[in-house]
Length: 297
Image 1 (cartoon, rainbow, N blue to C red):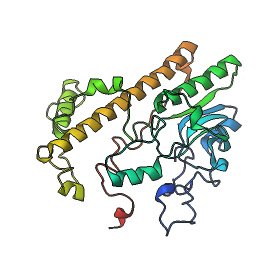
Image 2 (image 1 turned 90 degrees about the horizontal axis):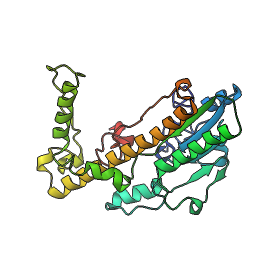
Image 3 (image 1 turned 30 degrees about the vertical axis):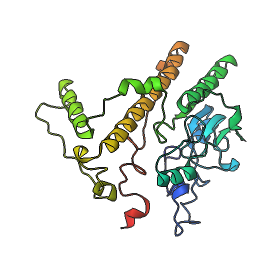
């Protein structure tokens, strides 16, 4: 929808490629990739004289004829599937069910322009948010080096903070213990801080938490924090610490790009849009709300 300006069914992704049901397979609108019935934004901008750049997650087609290079991006480095290990190696996972699901979803498959990347050639200190930033900065510097006067469109798409939850220790450490008293107390602290900042009135009352009646809730994994086992609370708290570290690292990398544009004197002439899709991702593995075939029940 972002890249086509149309409904996702019109653009071919009525369902993600990994989630297409048998009754959808082969039907128009369920191709599982950005189809040819729409003009992609980078195609339109490239035709209008823009330099079009992309670095980050694609998830709109895995075959060479569906790479970003074929949809209007002049230069690109992309993670082709929907998720992958952020450190370019396969994670060791605790839950066998989760592991089998992730193994289907997370092989690291990267493309540079029209070519598949040999993962062995990636730097040993590879971390997705850092490397996506390095490549985008490289594209922008190349533009400066050759004195390319065209306006640019840069599509800069992090795979963080999507699972698997992984972040450099330096970014996780500041959050140690901050989530140990559970989500409801965290919510109340944040709400009180909003009042102190004057962003909500003093008389405001937060809406109650709505918890879906799911199997995980019945097992004490999504209901009252105080009734969960100590192991469950530690696991959840640690997950949040790493999630926060991933967001912080992402913020730091965005700052690198913004600072570079400022150094060039181009920041005031650049329109920056920041968007996030799922928020605190829990749609598949943790909060486990209604999803996929469950919507039919």
